[in-house]
Image (cartoon, rainbow, N blue to C red):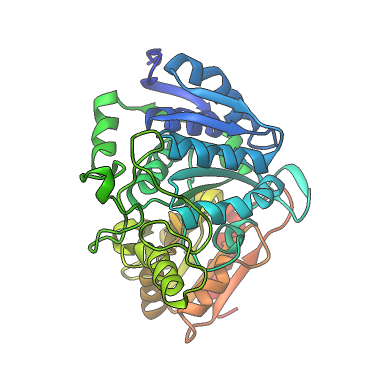
Length: 393
């Protein structure tokens, strides 16, 4: 059925591309500020936001580069906006210093990275999955982020909403790591009614201070979830938001090892100790699987087809698809290592998530199937790998 056009949230069934679905998911989540710089294969997100944000009372800013883009997003978030930017590999590299600033100042924001082949300018319009480790370790110092890996146009919409939920709930930068194929492919997208979207958002709102300004300590965290309530600039709460080591009142304390330890440990622990509420993955036939493929993004789709084909031939195969790449579903990975006799990891890079899998299951030999260049794995290739693994090859 044709979609119903609304100025605030588009509803109904659409045939569209992943980048467009991402932009519409952001708008549905309440994003009203976007700052960006054109870069393939993410440019369609910026184009869509430039068109749609004025319709919903939002602001689109074309920045001079990616450094300025993420800086503007951080400022907009402190001004009370849900804010987002989108880029690809080289632009993501330029954003890293300010991603660290967002982590240190506990700024909710969403960074979409439509991954392409690298390093350097690499393959501007070709797919890749080479930015996974950079998403986690790209900036200096100790910090935690949340990174989601969609595997369909529908998930580009749904997980962009979820990215905003996580950013608001845990006051941290959240990444949507989609490969070029997911960003540019076209398929069915179902956008629910605004009431359904509101139900997804209601539990993840940004916590606001419930005390007078004179009593407000801007970085004093809730002892349960370790996330401090956030006042916006212009609301009467006077404080200092800085990337320097600071105490609960925002006062610079670069002279104190104790303050620094307490702050950085909390920045990490607010994600680590809530990982059970954050981690998401898809499991297919893992209970009795002798051989399991671990794959994410576009690669999970031929992996699913290969597993189903193997099952039809009587091979007990299974699939583990991480949806949150960070935090990685380590317990599920460990369980796979305990149950399955063979573990296969397929990625369009030369070894990233596979290193985390090997670290989590050191007792199990992990077979890695890399791809580099514009093509990802076919179902036939992965089915052959499953059969070889069963034969011990």
